[in-house]
Length: 258
Image (cartoon, rainbow, N blue to C red):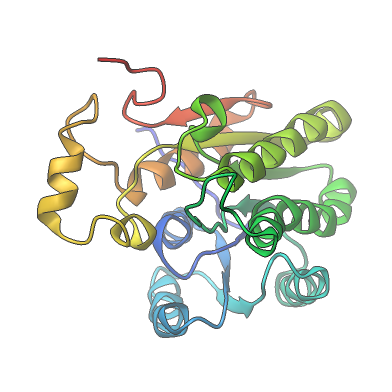
């Protein structure tokens, strides 16, 4: 029987109150990992994270929730310190937090550009820097970047999104060069169209989602579980020899032309 276990490990997933991050937290908890949920004080997050927290505990693992804007260095330090105090360290870091402002390069305000880069470029840098000491001491750790197929094709409707996610992918390449021989594995997952709250802001009914899905090579929009399954595998011992990989989980959309 093919089984994946993350038992005894602690996973910190940024942006994990809802959407892809919440599903990654859920599946990693089912695999036995203790979980650090990260949320921001938005109404939707404040409503969602307590429910998720209790669900994760029902799987027989420990879980805590930490409020932190990952673009804020001090808040990231406090979040990782809380994880270290509770669990003794972070074994798995999933840099997932993201925002999707839609704006062309001509129209994007500087403040929007800075916030986009802050969440999706500065955030992974701050989080990775804070968890590295424990991983290096233990000579073992997994760092996963949830980016986007937009780093390949430039899509996404905004200049900031692929730019920031490209920066995050650059961090992974540096990590591989610097730390692969020290027991730290870093990889990238590139989702395409996934049915999340953010996607529903643009396609707000099941009918619109289904219609959009018909345009995808596989005939439907992806689900958060599709990304979560890949994340659990890449952060498990089953993927011990996978380091520096970029895995599209995109229903073939990235390179599909019709």
